[in-house]
Length: 328
Image 1 (cartoon, rainbow, N blue to C red):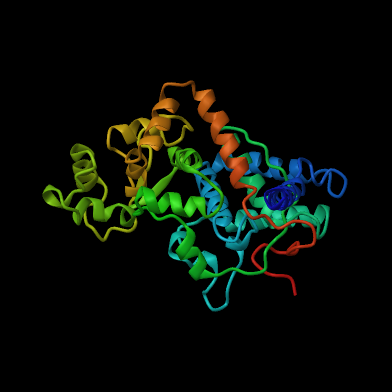
Image 2 (cartoon, rainbow, N blue to C red):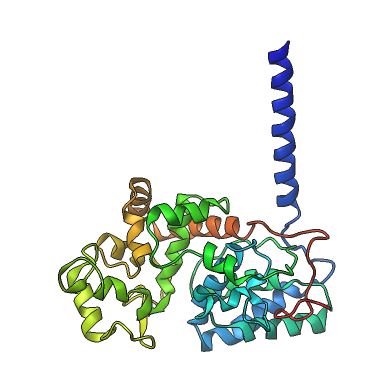
């Protein structure tokens, strides 16, 4: 009897947990604004199509901004908030190179003119990220909407939770796991680096302060490293030179990023780290031996999953009037 009773209790608890998860997921839905602001998603897409072709590098910026938002406090647009004391997420070291905040505000102003107080900044960021990547030739993914905006933005949380270019695989996977993401998601979302750019401080220690000959990281292809030192990061302190994360293919959303990883030509330590785990490495090889459409499809699944991380829905949070400011 005791065993049967315990089993019932476990079943009830498990069912309750599943119901909670299902409820949270159900509150995000496709075309959430169909009745409250029917033109919302078209307004976002039209603005992106009008402006991103003139600044295609913003696609990578919005992809990164969306990720940095979701990985801290969930996808609640907390990365967009300003702080008079410089203590917001956008003031954290990983976010100092984010671009496009003004773009998001312009989209927000268009939506406020159409439907005041209806469309969240969190949804705007998710839609802009997707539409920007799509407009520049990348994959499409579903963006269920209904997110609400957070009211807290904390620099310490951002510094602690956003993956660093210097992290090893174990640390990366821990940070992803903390948000309900797995090693497959880690590999796929890192694939966004195919259109990414960076700067020398993110790689200088691999070029100047490592254990290999000339200070070069022995896990980095020596020819690639020497080329970076000779032509890009000529000094360890250079913080202005732009580096392509997928040299020769940066403007194309493709598999070449993963090919470079196998040639030990990943720019970041965190890129190279993806090849140090057997499961991760096996998936990279699977991607490279499959069609580009397989990568697009899998990337789309990972992006939709990431976009659901710890979202605020229903009566949680608020709908900001301006994305950089909490409502009074």
